[in-house]
Structure formats: C-alpha cells, structure tokens
Length: 111
Length: 113
Image 1 (cartoon, chains in turn green, cyan):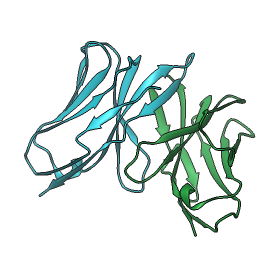
Image 2: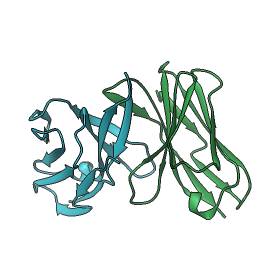
Image 3: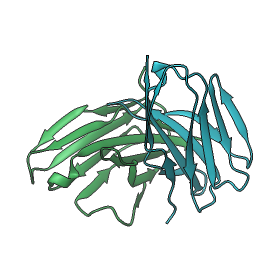
Image 4: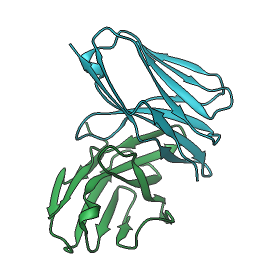
C-alpha cells in the first residue's frame, strides 16, 4: 500500500491560474518535503515542514506557498503558475536521517 | 552551496555488461544515499552509506562511499533490462535530527536486451 500519496498524478492548469497539489502520508512522519524536478534535472528542494515549523529554501520563488494543516497532509499552492513552473512535483516524508519516502509525484503542465 | 555532480549523464548498454556511475562533490556529507527513479514515479531509496570507505552490496549493485565522504560510486554487475532507470545520488546535511537532501542530476541508464 502506498505510504505517501500525491494527488493528482497529472495536473493541467492555465498560465496564471492558481493550482494546489496535495500530499498525504500514513507514516506519521515529522518531516514533509516538497521537491520540484524538471526534465533531466536534479530534484530541487522548495521547502519542508518539521512538524508545524515551515522552512523555506532561500531561492524558492514567492509564487510557491505551502500549508500543513495536520501531520498527515501537506499542500503546495502555486499562486500564478508560469510556463517555467511546469515540472514534476515530489512530496517526501522522513522521521530519521537515513531515509526519505517519496510519493509518485504530480506532473504539472502549464498551458 | 553544496553540489553533487553525477557522471555519466546518460548510459546505454547491453544486457550482461558491467557499469559504474559516479557521484562527486567538493563538500563533505554526513551520509550519502542512492535512489532509483522510474518514469512517472518518485525516487525509491536503494542504499545509504554513512562511514567513509564503506562498501554496501545489494544483489548485483555495489555502493562505495569515498574515504573523505565527498564522493560515491555505484557499480552494477551483469546489468539487466530491469535495471533501466534514473539513478540519483543525494547527500545529507544534518539539519538537527532529520534529513535535508541535496540531489545530483542523475545518471539515466538504459539496458537493452
């Protein structure tokens, strides 16, 4: 059974139209991460939550926001998607230093 | 800024061949992880190496962490088509009890029957 679930698997939005991606976990992990992965590039950390503490990477655009209403759920909000935001968005969780568990990702297309 | 460079970027081989991919950095990492990612899926952890010089084996895959904990290699013996995928290395910086990973850009491996 999937332990980190991302919905939807594929998301198409229009230029400038807000979009929300969701992630849920059944592992009860303290930490949840959002990574952006563009074709043939490394996953890039956008931000992460340690419990309720939000940690933004310095180079994450203001256009990206996140919410974690409880331990199980985390959301990625893109306020005004641009063409350059088309990518795979990966959610991951961890409770220990050694291992991250990734979801299957949401492939975002911006038209 | 910590960076991880992986080489080669692409590798296309025949079934049964051996191969090695490399992950290099000028930074020291507390641990280094290798993930395999298939198209349309998230990365799946293969192994974590923690100690300088450490060697770990996972069936036909052999992972080594450099003595100075700045680099790592993955060697696959007798590659199979099922080994096809994107291999990512990721270095961990200790952020106070949990992992914050820096990823390399990956090596895309294709194994042909």
